[in-house]
Length: 363
Length: 258
Image (cartoon, rainbow over all chains, first blue to last red; front, side):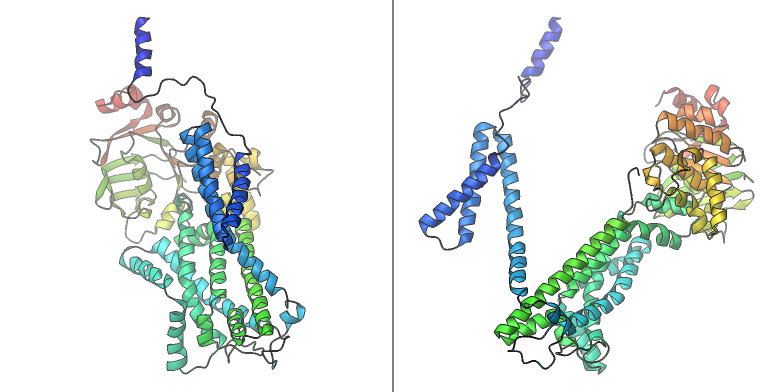
């Protein structure tokens, strides 16, 4: 009996160890504390800003954020103890980081919608600039939409299969030096500035081979930018496919190429599609190569293989350059259309990813 | 249709590391042969050399001979794909194809190998699912995803998938280690039925399971960590578990190691 007692004593007294806690309950701040603190610090932040006569609202916000973090920490440390205080400190910082990231995005969207919706209507979407002088209101972006769709479409037709097959090679077949070299050059390609891709195609296609500007020339430069993105994202998706599935298929006596085609690709098709769509969204906003290779146009040109075309980002740039009130409005409206285009692509990609994702669970 | 396997002087490597050393044994047709032994002794590696799945692992290579009714699996001109159609495999963790329905999972091997006539497929799928004792549980939901089944059902689905391509030999790599006792019993009963038609080789860590299901048992061991695994002995299951000829086997079976 006494042995047991001394053992317990020893356990409780062991160096560095805390004795058995008396209760599992602990003082906690009420649930509404963070919200109340946030409101209070916002108010105090505005008050200080007003009193000190600070012009910038950013400074007001920073003061409020600082007050919130410090206030939460002090209050929590006093009531709940050090561990909870640190937890709340980290949570507060994460929230502030989130707000900092969202503010530019929301402000950008708000600005574009507010300014872009002024001239955005059916007429704007269905007419080109034609012979309209830049200073006058009117005109539209039909020719730019056609151009962007064709150039991005052609670039995707070139880059998606190329990137897909490269990724399949790297994940399923690539061993040794060649695979390492390919990986290295894909990494290098990821870092190519878009203007360099444009200059590359310009020097070969237009200067050396002597072709004129065309949507296709632009599409080639866009494809150069797109390939590494597709390779990278597809590679990651293929690596996520469990090896067990490949082995299960191989053990059924299925050749490797059919295993890849019928098991590996269907399992990862959702992620691959998302990756391709994101790459498309990325190149849809490229201006530099388009300016070098497609040149821009005021009229509708539906043939991407002949003569200059327009594209949305280039249209925005050119309208902004004109500097008249009417062309500013058109630039904003075109920017809004471009953002909407990219957003719709993203939504479609997500839809496909969800629709194609391997179904788990009981159903 | 079941075939006999004769292995002689087989060693398997991962890169420069020798995983199993100089194994020779025979596996009788229409019987169940169990492989037992401590982890890392090369049972699974050896099993995978029997349908050329070992070389799927990067760096995996094999020396020696595996005769399947007088035909060397590692002879020149032998197509590993053809070998795997003849020697099927069931894995430790149930791995149904997540994008396919129950029906498509069972039909996968056939369809991926070119049988596409719907009526043929329906027949074979039903036969295979019945063969795997799963038909009654899934016949009303053949078009639902295979990943929605329970673990035990998934494993029987994988067995159905393996027997659908009509192999001669069925290799099972710890097929019950992820299953509860009831599902294990179902799979063991199934093994008893399947041995009428197939040659079965099963790796297991469960000694009672080896004693229950197998006709012959092979004991593998390794002399030290990092050393290649070797075959200690192979004999009738009854003898291995009652009166083995090597002391190490008896020690392992009765739980006395080292």
